[in-house]
Image (cartoon, rainbow, N blue to C red):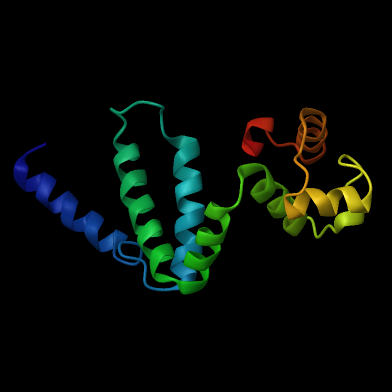
Length: 142
């Protein structure tokens, strides 16, 4: 490829990428999340795959958008303050619309409340049972 052809390809890419880099609205943000997920599935696990550079570029645009959005920034700040196991448990509960009585893997309703308040911790058996129930890797709790 010649320098002129490469420059033309860059201009074409920039025109196609304009709605996503930088992200300007929620609709393009949602599309960018879907797009990056699709690209991650297609990309080779190699630094030589040029798709990985596009993923990096798109990831930076997503991060910048999330940092500008007050609600997302507040959510991230709150999530980062929580221990990983509690954050994961709260996320699973929210996604599946579960209450404290809906987690027999941990125990009684009062035991779940104690775990959520930080009074008690999830043990190895809790994590194993939760990861099996929700089909997630146990390492996400650490």
